[in-house]
Amino acid sequence: DTAVSQTPKYLVTQMGNDKSIKCEQNLGHDTMYWYKQDSKKFLKIMFSYNNKELIINETVPNRFSPKSPDKAHLNLHINSLELGDSAVYFCASSQGGNAFFGQGTRLTVV
Amino acid sequence: GIQVEQSPPDLILQEGANSTLRCNFSDSVNNLQWFHQNPWGQLINLFYIPSGTKQNGRLSATTVATERYSLLYISSSQTTDSGVYFCAVVHSYGKLTFGQGTILTVHP
Image (cartoon, rainbow over all chains, first blue to last red; front, side, top):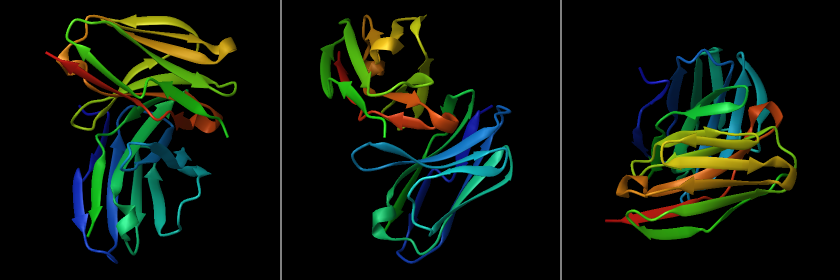
């Protein structure tokens, strides 16, 4: 009965590869997000979708492309992975600003 | 943009002790949340608190929006309280801006 679930939990890949992270929420929320947590634990927003429409796009390289097929899903595709992309990526959903997070995906680029 | 500052950055306690974590923010916000990131990396939603005081077991939170701060109280701390505590302010489109976190270590 996980409210916000993302897969995979761990992802190890080589530089230059393309990878995707999937996220699904069963809370019925209208808004979903991707956040990035760096090695110093700092959390920063990347994207936000409301009812499948992109509403926030922070200064993220265009190698990162979010896709929302419906309001319960928000996937993140990353092209041409670089060493600096190594981080923990969190998906979240919210209604009225009250956000709930997935368990995170630890991405390691080697 | 809005600034969010948490203090202290680190806190070490013996089991059973009480503590107060503080979050200051630089501008008016729609709301504020407190999260606990446990040692397994999960971000757990503790409180959604625009103003006033809320309690949940041994934890309580108070937000004074007019003075731009929030406090998280942990009473009778347990080793399972260890982890990183984040406050995050909620503003445009539900966007969260996080503080840098307080690392709490509770020793048995």
